[in-house]
Image (cartoon, rainbow, N blue to C red; front, side, top):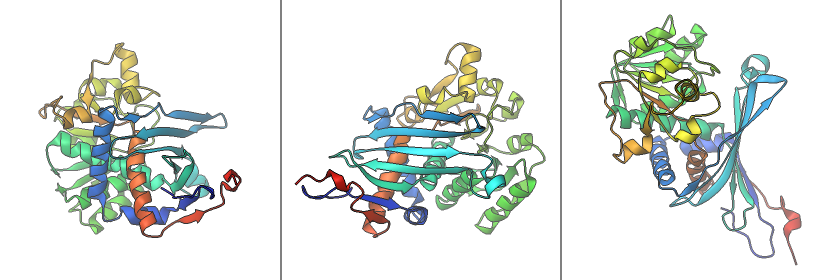
Length: 344
C-alpha cells in the first residue's frame, strides 16, 4: 500500500486494465494458488465477506450493478470493494463489453482508499482460477476427454487461458452459443492457441452429452436447461453463470458451492431449488470442504460446482496485482486526491 508521512496526505494509485493484465499474463498458476489460499483463509473464519449488494435499475431491467465489500485476513491482510456492472445490451448498442468493474483497496492503517484498479480482468481472472481449481479438485486431475462450453464470451476465454497455461490435456471442445458465429470464432481462437479441435454444437444438449467437463458461462437470468438425462454420463459441470440449470438438474447431481449462504440467493439455480425443496439437503458441501478432505465427491455421479463469486477472491488476486504493478512502476499516483486531510 501507499506510504505517507504524518504531514502528507494519503495518495491514491490508479492502475488501468493493460497494467492489470500485464501482471496476470504468464502467472495463472500463481493466481490459482492465490484463490485456493483465499478459500482456505475464508473457510478458517479469517475473513469478513458480507452479502453482495445488487442495484437493479427500473429503466434497465436486464442490467445490474453489484457491490462486493470484503476483508481477507491471514497472510493477506487486505480490505476493499469490487463495484461491477453487467449491462447485457452494451455490445449491441455501444460496441463495448457487457461488464465493467473497479476494485478499491483500502490502506490497512488509515482506512483510506489507497488503490483503484480496473477490475473486469481481475474479476474474470478470479472466476476462471476458481473454476479451474474446482475442475482439478473435483475431477481428480488436469485432463478431460472433451470439454463443452455453453456461452463463448469473455469468461469462457479466461477459463480457456487457465486450462492452456496449466497444461490441461484435452482431446477436443464442443461449443454452444446462441450466436453460432461467435462459437466458431471462439473455436478458431482455441485451435490457434493449441487446442486439438472443436465442433460447434447444434443445441445445448450436445455440449453436455459429448463431454465429461461442461463449463456454463452464459448471461442467462432464468434456467434454460431442464433435462436431468443430460447428466446420465456423470459429467463435471462448472456452473459459473449460476442460473442456467433448472432445479431438476440440480437435484440430479452432487452440488458443491464456494459459500452456501452466498450461493443460495438472488434466484440462482440453487436458490430456486431451495425454494422448491424447502431446504438445502441437496448441497453436498463447499470447495474448501473438498480441499480439506471433509467431503468426498463420488466421481461415478454428476457433480455441479456453483460458485457465487466471493469478494475475498477479488481481494486476493487484486492485492497481488497491486503489489506487482507498484514494483513495476505501473499506474498513476495522485498525491493530492485527499489534499485537505493534512493537519499542520
